[in-house]
Length: 303
Image (cartoon, one colour):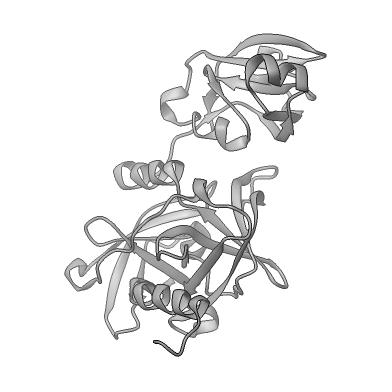
């Protein structure tokens, strides 16, 4: 590979590692890609790829075919877990990374099966972080939070495939083509691992519901100097009748802490809203009109 420049060498190395670990998936009327992950015959794909299907088929570039069973799907993260009928025939799992460490401009490589073309590889950079993607669950106002935006070329069939860093670690599950030259991927991080574990254990993900919509915003200089905080989550909307509304939260509040943990973005809240938070008092600290305000919300189960 001496004839390759460093960029090409990196992309080709990642491609060689991951191409055999990403399958083409057909499930019901849907098709896409899926990544072999650690576990006994486990693959991860998008919830919208499998839809309502309970079974399907995985095809690998080396000619291996196996039936798969849909263990569970979570439309709110657009993730689904599959179990292969012939686990022993699967390739070794892909290495998983942590998308929380990504930076804008970082090289990423996408591996999938766009337009039925198995084992396709494209490369690009992380174009933006923290994007929100409307879910395909039919529930208005619900979004997949903290999505990765990339300019790596994605096409129909890439959904469910791998987005990897320069070391070949999977940092995202490609989920959508948002426009020409603009692709999106669900991040692989601690929250994703928790979702996958819940799907494996129960076939579904139970979540707590707070009822706020917001975006990252800077903390005023005086507050930042006093509390050592530079960013919070500015609430754009508090859903009427929600636990947040009943607790007294308001649009315009700058959320600083939830559950006595610092919050800088939507993920800071979402990672606390799983089954163990349902019905449990959750302290929230916000900055409102220059004053610190403490409230206690009691999340309900997300229906």
